[in-house]
Length: 226
Ligand code: CA
Image (cartoon, rainbow, N blue to C red):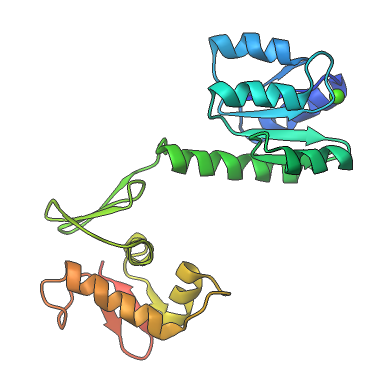
């Protein structure tokens, strides 16, 4: 559920409509006071908050919510000066959207913030545990278990292993893997990928020369065994 606080009826209806047509549940409120009353009954997953509101303005409402709640707040503003304030004040808002906004941008921002919060709070409802042979990969907890025993795995090794394990049977070139895990602008090269694959193998493979999980496809790259 997403709560939208906006005193201008047209914009409020547009916000709710845009969210509902993309599959979200949304409810509109005219003032911070109305939002406060609603939040005593039900907490939303995210709040879109207009700044120019009758009564308490969006800045004040944002500050009040932040004192108590860790819910993503996206401020909606028509003015550049407000945007400057949002940046400067440290209000605890997660983002801001400038009016007039495009529905596509609104939805993209909402999704991005929901996703980030779900990751932070571990509320992801998807399949958390990926099972491959004796290997269990806890996507959200960033942990790897071999026969039930935890294998310490730093971030990049974890991401690389998870990516390969999520795509069993598919060969990826070192270039592709480097781009996916490190990002195009990162320092390093395809040798980084080999180094990490070797480290992972030392941790999860019974024999690193005859790997059960991550196979080398000579001249091409790596493949997680199906
Ligand atoms: Ca307004």
